[in-house]
Amino acid sequence: MNIVTTDSQSASINCIANPATSPSEGWKASMRAAFRRTGDLAEYLQLPDTAWQKGLAAAEDFPLFVPREFAAKMLRGDLTDPLLRQVLPIEQETVSVEGFTANPVGDHEATLTPGLLQKYHGRALMVTTGACAVHCRYCFRRHFPYGEGPKGIDAWSAALAAIHQDTSLHEILLSGGDPLTLTDGILGQLVENIAAARHIRRLRIHTRLPVMIPCRINDQLLTWLTGSRLKPFMVIHVNHPHELADDVAQALALLSEAQVPLLNQSVLLRGVNDDAETLIELSEKLLDLNVMPYYLHQLDRVQGAAHFEVSRAEGLRIVQTMRSRLPGYAIPRYVEEIAGDTSKRVIA
Ligand SMILES: *Cc1c(COP(=O)(O)O)cnc(C)c1O
Ligand code: SF4
Image (cartoon, rainbow, N blue to C red; front, side, top):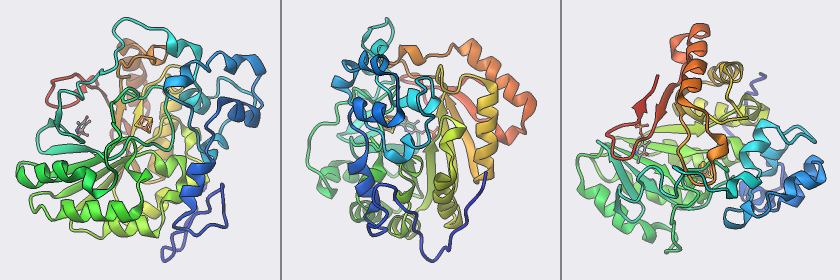
């Protein structure tokens, strides 16, 4: 992997959608230019005609959304490409399978106020937006009732009041959806408000943007992320080593040069990363880029995602192989989420 180092004075990565746009706005052009129709993505990738059409019904309630930056990393003409498989609506999603439900991890029960979830001691998760920079077909929040409430800082007044009041909280996670689909202006205000609660020490951003639209990592973002009293962490979400191309490496380099600790979580997915070689290569590449492997999640049993499931027994074998080949710090914790537990449950 070729790590591109950039001049840390000016963080700017070209957005492929519109390289001419100013560095602070280019990512929005990439969002607008993303594929939203399976037919357009199929044409771009030269996919065999009929195969993808069977999945059109699955796209009705959870549409396709794929940035061009991500599509560019897929192999042409290959329906089994591990990146494509994460995002292509297929017929199997519409089959209901017992045990796979709309609310698999107890999000509804963990809601403190609208937009604020707490499952674990000391940390609470803000559902900042329903928007994402990609629609992952296995997403555990694909049926989450985000609602169409007010946008912007006012939308979070109840959540922020709860954060200010509860002095047992030390860490706020910004999640969603994907928090980095919000503008830097709004995120700056949000972080400033959170930082005013003196008991909060850490801010954790859960995002796929550095991978989906690498030019999202710009100066404006680095300013609010590193400019507050809060210790920032970023958890990215990479499932396959092909996702870590040079543009992504460049975005991650900007973050690590700015002293933002980087962690990665993956979901164990049938047909994407369900073999030890792929996950070993993923860990190696992450370490090259200063990203620590954090979690490997057992799939949450969300309706429409059954075809992605890998059994725990198989997952255990994969992780054991990884452990026999890599240093301990390169092994993500293999975990599952059980509604009502006080932490993620460690499988291995
Ligand atoms: C997964 C999760 C967290 C983070 O758990 P860590 O083990 O600290 O990474 C926090 N809050 C909620 C609601 C979660 O689902
Ligand atoms: S980016 Fe995260 S929240 Fe958004 S669709 Fe993918 S898994 Fe779900």
